[in-house]
Image (cartoon, rainbow, N blue to C red; front, side, top):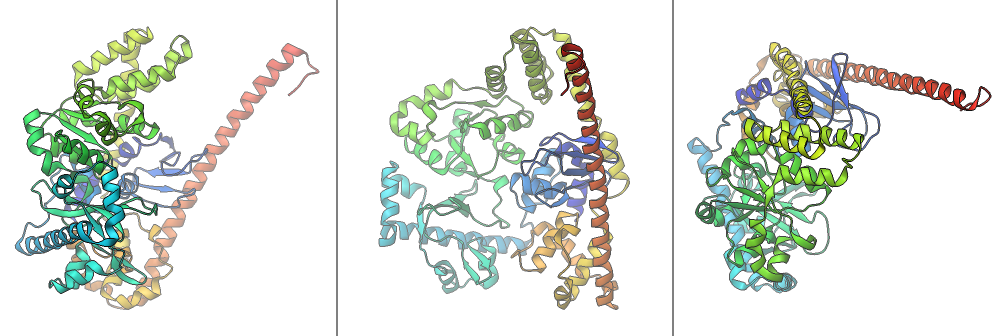
Length: 569
């Protein structure tokens, strides 16, 4: 677990979570609105000294910085580790460095290759796939394009792929590790059933997983392979194996949102187009792309969620060491719809791409009336944090000039606000130092509990009262889910840690009594955290209520002085 501990020690949870919700210091903790559900009163608490968080509202969940990123960015444990490691320049050991892992990964790849061939055969020849063939024809795909991208169809049966892999000699463990099946209460069933299949390749062109679209409007509309040692959404980009040569040649990459938005442009000869795997573009993606080009153009949906995504993309310009541009597709069309309507419009559209920050400026000024003092103030409030994310001092100053020119606010005043923003950002450093004084990755009581459960599986039945939320560390939560059968496999990064827990012989003596004691202790610590948070939240509510009363008293006084003493509110 050395890599996990290093990441936790070098990552400030306040800095990370502060990018998603505004935090206010309350005693030794910070509170804010929960970034996972809508609420008017903050029930979300961050504990800097413990480097942990918890929502005491509708979510009722918490954990460490890794679990926060897993939940917010919808990443697996391994992908969250890579996401945070990239931010701090930490090198995460690659999967499959030893011969045993290489062989295991090779078998997973071959299983997915076999599945891709089977699904493609089904699409081309099975009667059940006729509606899918009709759908693809309506979407404008030619047989050549379908063959090139190896599209397929997964039968509705629960065990078609399982039987195929078993017949070809794959073991039960290999099938479970392939990402092609899923564990349910009814047993192991095929993960993909009755879906249009999009094979996903790594940059070498090897099939490492699948994206799958439902054909009957059932949910989820799109489903990806389960995370495996070879499949992680944070390090994969759909179509990159087909696009890499064109990206190098044209020194530019176009990033779209969907599989069809990649396939159709390629069909028309625009082969530098790729897509992310259902997640926001992250630093891992940028680190892959900048080996091919520094010029990135986003062609994404311009809805409200898309606008927020644009704001989160700004810091990635620092990773690319270049501005990222975006293009707005006319009439609300997707790239594939535009291409089918008139593919000749694409080059001119890409040529008109504007820098993301300029786009954010434009949309901000469209929603704010800068003719008023309040509007000028709001525009500065909204745009200064964006400018603060620019690490290049020349570009940063250029946007300061632009903001001052448009709002007609004194440039020095904006620079003062910018410096205040930086101070607010870096004021969290003492918190980070405090966290380093006490290792946060090691919680002996959690580790001791898990050691008992690993070494004595029969104890699981006696630990029904052990709530996952009693744990803070994400790796410990994950191992508990694994022991309870809620996860089919451990992330490879946790294998050494699991082995260490399994080797703790100290837990064997009177382990039943020790388990009862440690569960009670974990419960006690959890309740203490809850009580402390409830107290701090209550203080916040009380302070806010006090401010309301003061404002009301002032309003009553003004009201009476205007209308006369007999009037009241």
